[in-house]
Length: 226
Image (cartoon, rainbow, N blue to C red):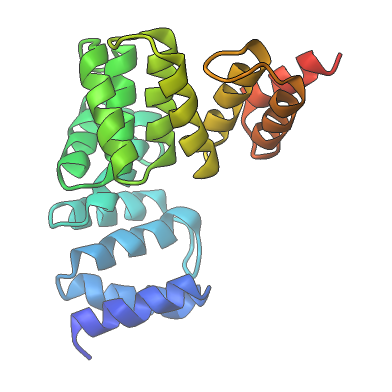
């Protein structure tokens, strides 16, 4: 079996929940030079699926995948460095990895890099750069990128304030499954930012956000239901 065949079969097993067999096949793929095999195997080690959880091994595999063209592995390793999970916390290293993943077309990397520019975390604060990155992320199908760009439009952060555009973008984020987007759209409906005021719709969106585990959504839901 070629390394690419092992990767294809391993990925199918991963998607069907056969994690032990997936780990065996992805090991063959990774050892054979398939970068994405290393990245997917790293995810198994990070989450303890089909193998014993080992964050150090996950980081090593992400690093190996990132050295090739596994842009998702660069992103995931960046998250580990930003949070200090399995590796020493290092925001500068996280920024480099997010940048590499974003340049490779991984929208989640663009999102996190944009968030760093928006907050000035590890890079000079630059709202225009942040918004450019959020736009790229949104265009590549990352719902959180749409939500964050919508927030920028609402706040007028590095961009002309436009609540109608904010509502369109937060709706896109929410419909894509991002609870932040649902919460922000709920705020829009509650106060009439870019959409007609509609408390019932706001409550529904806050509840959707809260159910998905977004704390601000829960706080807003509790506040409007008092």
